[in-house]
Image 1: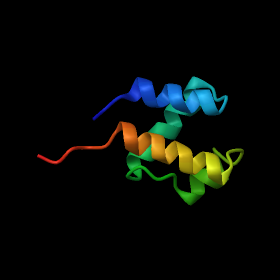
Image 2: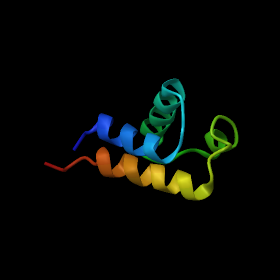
Image 3: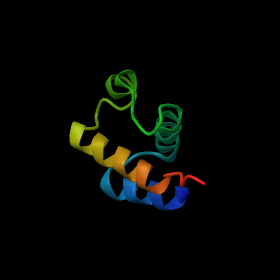
Length: 69
């Protein structure tokens, strides 16, 4: 199921992040199968706590889970 608007809204409700950075976050998650890489965690998203990252990954995977045919 794909609900990008819902997932971004849930993340923005948790952390204050500019749209540009939020889009980058979701691109990184998409590129890495729903996980935020260690490099992204230490560079672009260093201000996020480990708990926030886990919650964001959960939101992403919940909203973008693919159902198998």
